[in-house]
Amino acid sequence: MVLFDQAVGSNPPVHYLCSLETGEQALLARIALIRDAKRAIYLQTFIWTNDESGRLIAYELLQAAKRGVKVRIIIDSWVSIGDPGLMAFLNTAHPNISVKHYNVAADQLHPSALELVLEIVSNFQEFNHRMHNKSFIVDEAVCIVGGRNYGNAYFDRGRTRNFRDREAMLVGPIAQQVTKSFFDFWNSPYSCSGLDLKDVQQWVERSPLSADSSFDDFQTGGLFESVLTQADDPTKVQDRFIGEMLPVTEVEFFSDSPGEARQNKLSHKNRTVSEVGQLWKSANDTILLQTPYFVLDGVHYGVLESLRSERPKLRVIVSTNSLASSDNLFTYAFAYRERNRYFEQLRLELHEYKPYPPVMHEVMEYRRPDSVDAPRCDNLEACMSFDSAKHRHLCLHAKTFVIDDKAVWIGSINLDPRSAYVNSENGLLIFDKAFTSQIRDKIERDIRPENSWTVGISKRGRFTELLRKLFSLLTPSMGKVEKNLAEFTENF
Image (tube, rainbow, N blue to C red; front, side, top):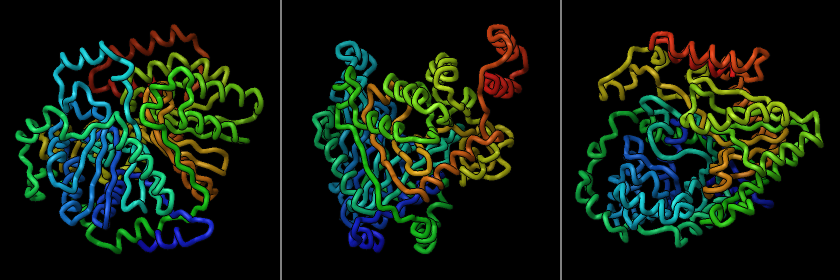
């Protein structure tokens, strides 16, 4: 890789990086890197869904394995429980593919409901600990770190919800640190080879796939003509990624150790939590936060409270989901409960993302410009053609923190107690004015009035206003519920 040669041959080391802002871009980057891999591919993720996008990546990895590339995958076991067929297939698909599952319940890929209940009752704290890290590494030279999992919703192919996400793709020595973190988890006692699980073979026998399956057998639904056409054209890949990469000299990678969040729950000394807090403390003028959920844990609340006291003019701007766009209503409810405290004590500037922002067509490449208001599509095959779909909306999933004009954090950590107390997380800290400016511009676009609602304390009586809004939600026809949800979010 030419850029890698330039990176390791420089003094001090230079990294080349770009952000992956759209699902199409993120998917194309992965396919191009898989096809370019010479020695090894390491993939770490929280979710891998058995849908069209998940099967496409599995197919590409299988082809790489057939070329002699060593493929290692580690996935948190929790979401695999839902539909383990694809993961079971990958466990036995090819000798060059090895799969491990993190914090497995009952030594099975798909335990019964009773077995899950027994696991939860017997040791809830252990069971609840999850690996939320995301990384993708090729030949220990190129890596992708950020918020995306593997599934249609993360690559702009979701039937309803699609995630507005962000990752950083880097070429350079930092990939070796990401690789080391990967192997920390790979070799952890929390990680179990899929071949050692009691029910993997049963799921393999049910799978319609084999090592000799054709591309059509993976049932990708014709959703990837655009990205595969680009991946087949080296010039387009070069223009789209290499031409966009910025040289950066100061990059740091942080990751919690396996099990660290669970072990340090009381002391709150997780490395990622601590580093994010230290990053915020370095702000002089502005902290710009973009997060799917905004429920501050004690450490981060304390940092912002101290900063507010020490630097009264410091702006803390938050971009997060609205009630209408969020994928987790319970977390939104917790955030709503704390809102007065955030406004009055921390004086935050809060912006909530709209489910159908005008910028939608810019941040979702793979969609027809006229499809937002198209009639409802009940036929799966027609719906997946993306010629029409109602209720296909956006949900923020990016976890990005921008400090002044000097630094940006891109990683897996959400601003909620689960990421702070329960999960393991990772992230990249990049010190570069040009790159920081690029990311800040993208977040500021997301919080423009046409794309996000600006939230504040209502001057009207809160109880009376709440009753009025709840009543308005119950009285209109079903066709107007979404509009009222949006109004409710705007005013509260």
